[in-house]
Image (cartoon, rainbow, N blue to C red; front, side, top):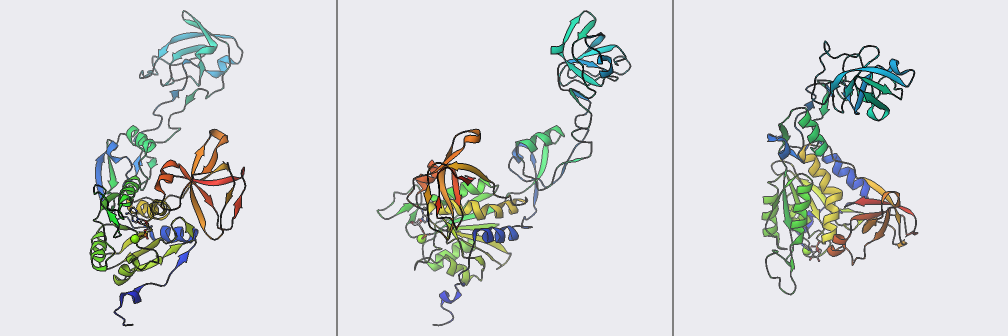
Length: 419
Ligand code: AMP
Ligand code: MG
């Protein structure tokens, strides 16, 4: 066999455990963000990653803020109840109680509404429910402790405090924080461009009428949707046939993006050329398989022809494609967006019916989680295997089974990964 035979470039198989595969991706996903910054209107920044820290521009709250409707009082005046206090006036939200004109002295009270500033001299708010007003006098039935029913100025944050870190993804809570600190525009990292390349002679565009042995290219669409969800911009390339030359051209095109996701052609079949062609391009492979189901043939590597670019070869079976994206490609995209890759969150739910399986692979089986609060129950979706995207569409989570388990009884609390 001559050394120019491309099959000699196939790397030695490297099948790793799920944990090892995750670790290898997380290791590479650090510091990969290209670091290009743009400034957007706050709401356009939803889902983007901050390229700047957001500071508190004033104290939060900016004044001692009443949290109840009632009367601002001196707690010491209510040591004995009922007590009668002189009412000096009222502050509602938006009013500013000038210390000269509105301060609470011994035996005095000021009516106060939720969100209003506490007048000077007062050290508590007594709820209106425990009071009875008659003209300029209020009778109070309950004692309060100093500090009750208001939030002191600066208790949530001090002016100049860092409220949102650079590298934080803007969700609705972060947007609220940025808004309240007066940031109508925010600096964020540009979205990474993620090339999506489906391979396979049988695969046709979704608006084509498939021939009897052809199937529509659903993977490019599920992947594009997942890429967008993860904070990237998907670039869908043409479908690559199982033919070296054309596949290589499209891979090279994909490597001009920040990340390349391939689907199909990574199994052991005679026409599974993805790893061979990447080998010809002098790719480095971190793993060429993971001990999981679905998705065992998943490949992760990088190409350094010009700039170092990462790629994933995801198995073509639609459920495998979607699962391996979430498990391995998502953390890399998160790194490219400028954030720290997020840990997977495994919840627990009670298994409805027994599961029997084989040992050796960590399994992520499509399942349906139902029930509420502490009664969460989970049951495997009926499925025909890794190609059954209809089953995944009916499911809302995966039951996760460790490689050493053969049988899991009904009633056991099992780890669940939300979809
Ligand atoms: P492969 O990974 O190339 O061996 O493909 C595994 C299975 O996934 C085959 O049944 C393929 O027809 C199917 N498949 C491959 N690519 C796609 C795609 N882009 N969309 C939907 N199914 C696909
Ligand atoms: Mg194929």
